Length: 173
Image (cartoon, rainbow, N blue to C red; front, side, top):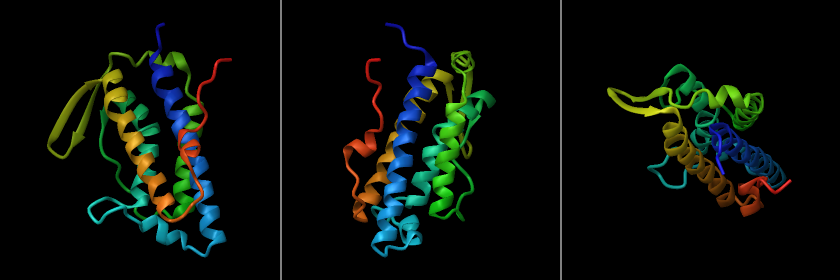
């Protein structure tokens, strides 16, 4: 069975971003019901040398919508900005990424196959082709950051579980 670039990336991105929308909502509801400041969650880290929840949520959008935009532009860099986003702002960022991904046309994404894209980190550049970048760089990063955001919410007591993280699987029609 052949699988298209769109199916391997955008459809997978939508599953994880959709799940993140759900667990972010449950996390906010839990915090509000239990007197936990959402500002506290936004600054929470799993360990001192990891970036906070805010960065994890930003990266959910950055490694999906930002990844597709980066491939189209031929260059991708770490996220910048977003330091002032509160919990609601992070939810909107993830919602906006979901809306962007939902509006993509398969033929347009599939046409990106073979396109050169460079990941730039300071003076360093990592050359990729679109499918290698999306599948071996952005998709693993998406799962890393979504898992970390999920874990922080779990650490704060949010009633979320594996099904919340997995989102909607692609069942046989």
